Image 1: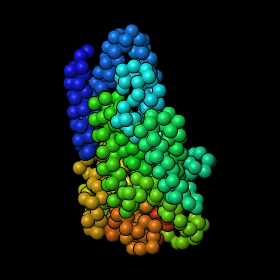
Image 2 (image 1 turned 120 degrees about the vertical axis):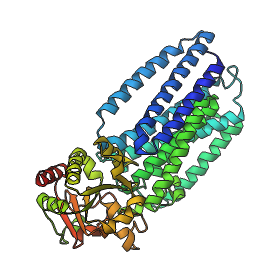
Image 3 (image 1 turned 45 degrees about the vertical axis):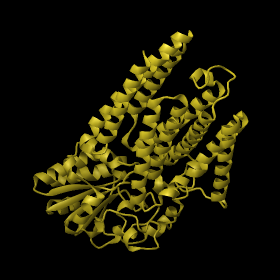
Image 4 (image 1 turned 135 degrees about the vertical axis):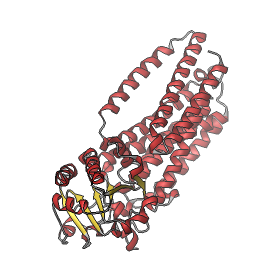
Length: 478
C-alpha cells in the first residue's frame, strides 16, 4: 500500500466524518450521518491495518497479529455493550467511551516516549525526540489523562449506584479546592514544559500522575444537574487528546478526526452552557455546578398541598383540548414509556388534537437524550420542537403534559433571582392554560430544587410510573 493511497483513503474517511457531523445535526438526517460515520471509521481502520501490515513486512515483525486481536476483542466488547445498553444507561456508556479514548491517548504517548523509533518519530533507538514532538506528546498525554479520570468520575455520578462519595450526584467540595486545582495545573504545565525542553522521563511520568489527579478534581465539584454539560465537555477533551497524539504519530486521519470531535464537542458545550446559564470558561476549568444542590429537605416539600388527579382525569383534559404540548424528561426514559407515549399521541391526533413535543437542550442526562428516545418510538420529526422554537406557543396551548421532567420546566429560573438556576432558559410550561405533571413522587429533580410549577392552581399532578400512567391514559382515550 503506497503512501499516496493511504493519504487518499484517509482523505475520503475524513470527508465521511464531516458528512457524519453534518447529518447528525438534525433528526431527519441523523441515520444518514451515522452511516457516514461508520463508513468513515471502517475505511480508516482498514487503511491503518493495511499500513501496519506493510510496515511490519518491511521490518520483518509480526505486529499485525496483535492489532487484529485487539480489533476483535474491542469490536466484540463494543458490540455486546451497544446491544445490551438501555436508553437510560446511554449517558454512562458515553462517559465510558470517553474514558477509553483518553486512556488510549495516554498509552500511545507512553509508547511513543519509551520507544519513539517504533512509531517512526526518530530513526533509531537512542535518538532524541524532537522538541516539537515532545510538546505534542505532552499535550496529548495530559489531556488524555484528564479525560480518562474525569470520565470515570462522570460515569460514577451518572450511574448513581456506587456508594463511594466521589461517585455521588452531589458535588464534592472542600476549602481551597480551586487554589489546589490552580497549583496542580501550573505544576502539570511546568513539568510538561520541562519534558518538552529536556526530554526528562521523570518529568513526563510525574506530569501524567498530576493530570490523572486533576481529572478527578475537576469533575467532583460538579453537581448532578450539570452532567449533560460534563458529558459534552469530556467529549471535546477526548477529541483534542486524539488530535495531539495524531501530530506526534504524523497520522493525518487521527488529527482530523480528533479535531472534528474536539471542536464539535466544544461547540456543543457552549450551547449546553447557554441552555443552563453557565459560564463556558467555568465549565472548562471545572468550577461550576455546586450551588444547584442546595434545596431544602424532601420532607418540607411533601408538606405543601398540590392538586392531584387520576389518569382518567388527565385523559379527559387531553381529549377536550385543541392543542397539547408534551414535555418528556428523564422519568420517561426510566419507565421506558416512549412507545406508549407515541400511542397516546396518535390517538389524540386521530381525535383532532394538535400534539407537539417540546425538547429542552439538557433534558435527560445527555445532550440529545430525549430526541433519541422519541426517535426510537418513531415520533414524527415534524412534531418535535426545540425550546427556542416552541416557547412562544405555550401561552396559547390548552394543555401541557410534563412526563418525568423537572428542572427544565421550573419557573424559579424565570421568577426567582435568588434561585441557583436563576437565568437558566426553561420550557415555559407554566404559561399554558392547564398543566398535567406525571411523577412518581414529589421528590426534587436532578438539581435538587423544589418546583413551583407543581403547586400552581392550573397544575394537576398524576403520580405513578410513567408507563403505567400513560397506558391508562390510552385506555381512557379509547
